[in-house]
Image 1 (cartoon, rainbow, N blue to C red):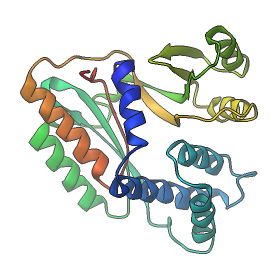
Image 2: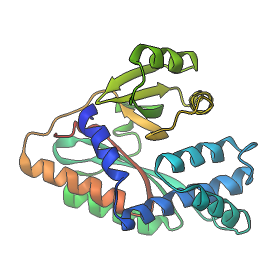
Image 3: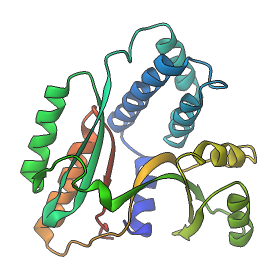
Length: 242
C-alpha cells in the first residue's frame, strides 16, 4: 500500500459518516466482549483489552462509549458465541486479500465472503494461500505535527520499535506482535496519541493495478468486506492508486 494514499484513506475514515462510525463501534465492541470474557474487565490486568481500548481511541471512539462498552460486556454473556475465522482469497489480477472475521454464524459469514470474492475478485482460496505474502506486525501511526523526525524516531526505537518510517507527515512505527503493547504504552506515557494502533498483516511487497475495471472491482471488494459487521480487519497487497 502506498504511504500517501494509505494514510489519507485512514484520515478520511476519521471523518466517516455516522453509519460507518456505528459499524466501527460495533466491531470494536465485539472484540471487547471477547477480550473481557477471556481475561476480565480490568484493563490493568488484561493486556488484550488495553490494546483494544487503544485501538478504539485511535478510531475516535469517545471515552464515555468505551466505558459503557466495558460495563455492558462485563455484565453480559455477549462474546461467548463468537469465533475468529480468517478468509484468504484473490482480488482482481490476483491481488492477495485477507479478511479476519469474528462471527456467531460461520455459515452466514462463509457465504458472504464467498459472494464478495466471486463477484469482485478471483475467488476464495485455501488457508495459507496468500498469508505467506504477509508478516504479522504491530503498527502504530502518529501524525508528525511539529515533531522532529530524528528525535521522534529515536524515541520510538528506544521504546522497542523495530522500524520507524515517515510518510505523508505520518510516522509509521512497526513492532513485533509481542512488543506491540510495550511500545504503545511507552509512547502513550509520553502523551502521544495514535492515528492507528493495531496488530496487522503487513505485505512483504505491493502490487499495482493498471486496468480501470480491476481498480473499481478492488475498491468494491474492499468496501464490501469492510462494510460487513463480521469482518474485523481487511489486509491486502494492493498499492492503492492516488
